[in-house]
Image (cartoon, rainbow, N blue to C red):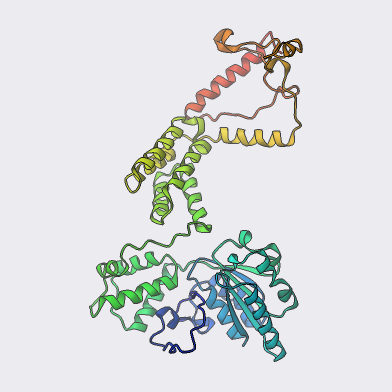
Length: 448
């Protein structure tokens, strides 16, 4: 397999008739290095290696409708083009950002004309998740009839963004961001194509980190770097900084990567790893996530994973949120880091979280039980005559402020238990107190 890269392109509207054609040397480097055959592809070996699904489809000639799901610049459009080329099929590209039902109808008509001439069609829909339900449904009868093979590309989880009817007729293939070895090979291929000076090891790794698994982004940045650097013996980090400036890494602020990263931060806090927690916090801040969102999630972590094992944790997170509101970025971000480290090192308990969820589940499936008479409020004479509040024991008037044997649950639920403290932190002492109260209730001479 040669050292070419697999990467996407963004389908563009047709050029005006008067525009001069783009020559090979004028085309962007990413286009010039686009793989022309399957054996030129690098990466995605879980789909393209021997015996893997897409390799088998190419070899057997059994092309199937599919959804290609993966981050930008990993080869979704390239794979679709290679499939169409391998089967000598008409290749129709629709962009869900720019197209509508009219464009879908025109694609169907073109496919019908091609079939009448004995030629097959592949319809490729870029950013398919941007089509609404009716637009996605417009493909269904033609996929069913075999008029064309449907290939959709998406950066979003198709389980949430693609209609179930369309999903049932298409196989989902997950594409991965290019790894470090893939990107090193791609840089070398680009260097040879441009006859450029070599990169220092530090500059190459920084460029690869900037590209973040996106082949198109790497090639565009590298081409810009070579153009700006001029005739030099080697390309170093200084040249790279001048070419890229303060551009941020790719960060999907509303999609799968966003939720994966906040999940990693939450799990690092829960797992008591302050270094990992700081890493994921900085990844999110570096990627442009609103710190206020992070602050809200950190407050949630204090309630869910620390709870009463350290009641101060909730106050620490609320204070951090308030500090950020007052100072903003970047000064206020340090308070968020302080809160994250505190949570990571605090004793952990999800006892309140578990108890709350158990109570919700019980109430949802249980009937509406009446409030016991002794617990009811009696603001009127009639209510008192009906025994509302009669016999209620005021806890502050009882020894140690505890009315042993008093019942606060509805009839028939005397033994119901939701909250079970963990033997850690402050909650260990809460557990001891709870056991003592349960003992006193069991020994009470005045059980209700």
